[in-house]
Amino acid sequence: MITCPCCRATNTAGPACRRCKADLSLLFDAEQHRAQLMHTACQAWKSGDLSAAHAAALAADQLRHGSDARQLLAVIALRNRDFPAAWAWYSAVSPTPPRREGV
Ligand SMILES: [Zn+2]
Image 1 (cartoon, rainbow, N blue to C red):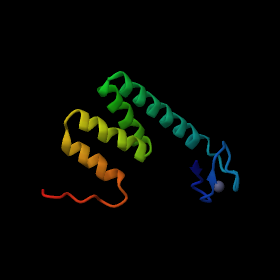
Image 2 (tube, protein in one colour):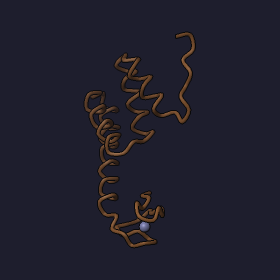
Image 3 (tube, rainbow, N blue to C red):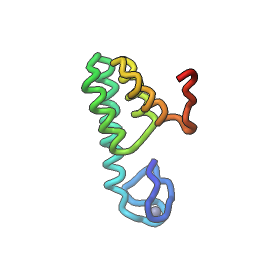
Image 4 (tube, rainbow, N blue to C red):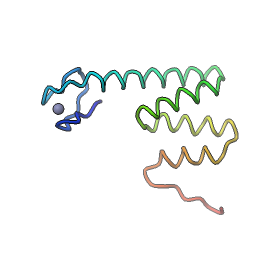
């Protein structure tokens, strides 16, 4: 779903905004590219290629922040035993920062 930057209407189909008819084709293209990156990241994760999974998930998160990419990045960091990075990605997913007990 794309929120129109002109009128704030939510759009599920493009390329024009359903309300103000602004051209949203670039936003829809970017969202499609992000979905492809997340698919690539999940396939790489399943095949055990953590480096490729990390690169694709990071690219997806840089394109648009999202809990899906950040959750995957947290799990990849855990798998790599990079606990500070895992905590940072986990904290970025949570709407309220989690508390660190006993640290
Ligand atoms: Zn609009």
